[in-house]
Length: 71
Image (cartoon, rainbow, N blue to C red; front, side, top):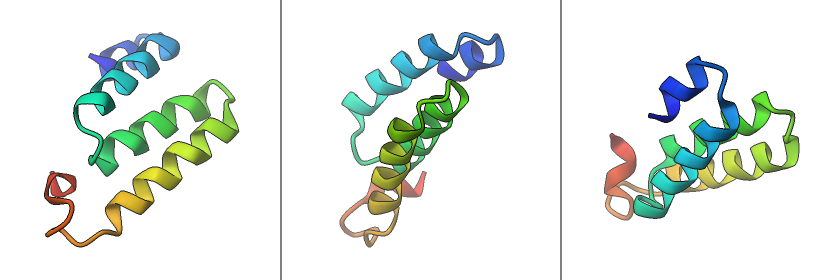
């Protein structure tokens, strides 16, 4: 849903949905990357950097610790 909202220019709504998705899957580096992209689009640079850093941290863990990030 977030990607569809983003495509329609509803970036803030998309961000809210990405944040909800992260609550259900906090180990997804991909979700943090997408969230960072959304924040970057609205000019929230600090929030974007934080989201990207969280995604990088999760993505750098071995898959044995973070199996869901491989999706």
